[in-house]
Amino acid sequence: MSEFLLTEVRGRVGFITLNRPKALNALNLDMVRGLTQVLLAWERDDAIVAVAIRGTSKQGNFGGFCAGGDIRYFHQAALGGDPSLEDFFTEEYALNHLIHCYPKPYVAFMDGIVMGGGMGISQGTRYRLVTDNTKMAMPETHIGLFPDVGGGYFLSRCPGRTGEWLALTGAVLGAAAAIELGLADYCLDATALESSWAGLGGVNSLDALQAWVKEFAVPPSAPSGLEREHIERVFSLPSAPAIVAALEATPDAWSQQTASTLRHRSPLMLHVVLEQVRRARTMDLADDLRMERDMVRHCFYTAHLGRSGAASETVEGIRALAVDKDHQPRWNPARVEDVAPEMVAPFFKSPWPATAHPLRDLT
Image 1 (cartoon, rainbow, N blue to C red):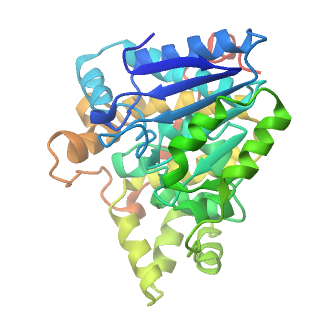
Image 2: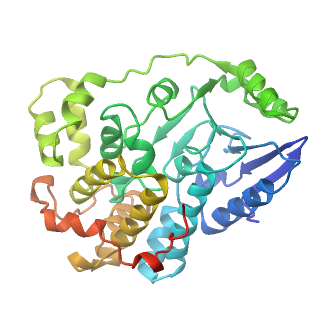
């Protein structure tokens, strides 16, 4: 078990606490393995009727759920040729699948930052709980990556074209917006998190769990503020260049700000991500995760573009955001209009035969 995971059983509920607050509970390989180990153990334990997970922060037991995967590790591993990077993504995606298919109710306290890999360990849960402090996003295009951990699957199932909008821009959602888009189920009062977590220990049946939810659920304190009409009009367009052009041709503040955001994302990955979400809309979860496992391999070893290591979009994006922190990624190509179809299509070709795929056993 990882030193960054705290587990306990109270009554008939298993409790997991992500305990890496200095890194915003970013997941490393040991944490992925620890989560898998404990969930499999509790799945077989008839005394356990439900599982709950939360994240710690520098302020205490709540305030931050999980900021995603450990991108500094990704950077170091890619530059150093560390083979554990391959293990990380294979095992993380298998964990995501386990959570989506988990036979017992799984309660995720999605307080504070819930991004990337944090979405992967919460979106498949039966009770996704947010607060007015929740900041939810899939911001991977900001680092030259794509919304993985099943992101293609759950974003593509958001209403209308909101999945494309979230995937391309990495927009941050609050509680009301997350619930409106089907990425959360209930809102809790942030001041009641300790008492609700404590009260969960008294749950001994599915009926008691539902009663517990009704006791603590509250309406979000603010409206979603989503620009649904704008999103549908623009993000239904057929290509990333068409989306950017339409935004830049529209003078309202939302369109101009969204266009500016996209101009700062990886142009190559905007094309890849749009294709990902639209393919995933007709896929089941297992096939989506296999596709994403193929894609992430190509992100770090982009053989068809003659790139790997520091030359990859992903390593460059992480460098600019989290290593050198100059926030000036040198994207290649530099403009969304300069990305050719032959740069995009190979991301969706598996580097493995079906019989040897790392996630071939997912069903």
